[in-house]
Amino acid sequence: MVIPIINGSYQFFRPFEVHSQLLSSSAIALLFPILLVPLFSGSYANEKKNNFLLYVKPRVRLTDYLFAKGLVNGIVTLIVVFSMIFIPFMFIEYLDRFFNVIQYEADYYEPVSVGTFEFLAEKSVFLYGVVYSIWVAINGALYVTVAYLFSILIKNRFVALTIPFLWWFIMNFVTGVLGIESFSPVYSVFPFLITSQPVWVVFVPFITLIVAIVGLLISIKLKNKVWVE
Image 1 (tube, rainbow, N blue to C red):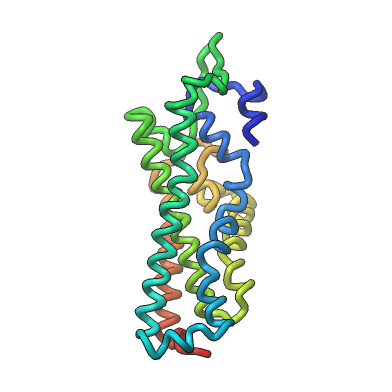
Image 2: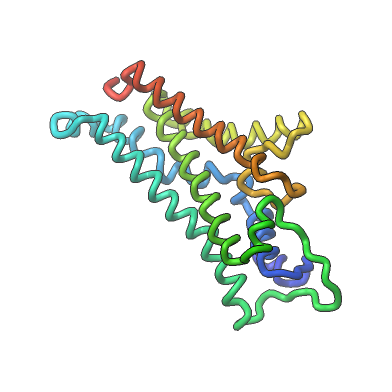
């Protein structure tokens, strides 16, 4: 993935253009939820399958245990995803100048927009890197949380952990067919392959995720699914 970017296949004028190309041309943008969900959301399903929760129940309230587990999953996901986005950004933007691995076009200057968050780079490139990395990290944590809650509601572990990816993939296709691809969950998190949109646009899929989480929590509460099996 890195070789085509640095060997002259692309023309770059600014370091953060390299960062955006690195993300948009990798599997991260296409498979974002499925890369994270199996790592952080499957623990409850495994514990339920192995009857581990039977040993937890006498020692602690199961609702408190599952809340703590979900919270830890979310925090760990935040840290991992933030690092996954921010560390390459820091290398490309600040460290590569000492190694000159990436070649930039010097004969003319026609910078390429990196999409919705470009306005941050105009104020401060570092601010852009921090805010964008946090944005991706929060979205990653939300997708992991959705999968975690589905693993509580649904007995089939595979189905529960696949739902976030199906949403990611199918809604990207549907919004494209309907001509409203700016509302695609993919472009909400990785807005590099679409023209710059107003900031509020990226919050539509984001708010949809939050509404889904609230709905799942209410469903778990009403059905008392925590205590099933």
